[in-house]
Image 1 (cartoon, helix red, strand yellow):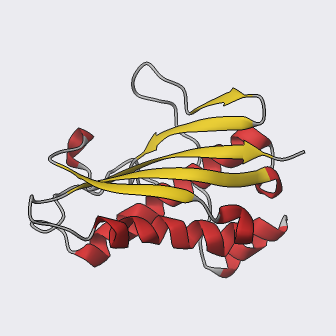
Image 2 (tube, rainbow, N blue to C red):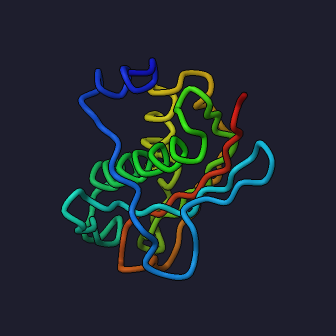
Image 3 (tube, rainbow, N blue to C red):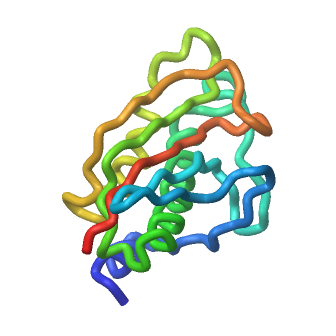
Length: 153
């Protein structure tokens, strides 16, 4: 087990299986040592989704849990792209939060994903980031997060 996967296990977490896209896209696209990871939503092991608008149906804490689940999916895809989490460095996250118009805590929600990446990868998990609010997201999910990673030799 790699050091990163040991850290993940110490958190009581495991990586989900990388699912097949439901539409016409791929989970990641590699260009040299950089890979672009498709947006991930909070999909549970049974295939169900966390759904609801933050600030109405969901609390900030529930949205943070959804963002962490997105982070686990990003880590799973990053491992597939690189062959090992030890070869992954996150460069950028783009986090979208489906929230009521007056909601302004998007960074706090997306921080749950950022916290996970740093906890699992250490400095290789630190990244640039955007966190924005949306009027809606596919399937009424509260959070969708995409990433850009560098694959280390």
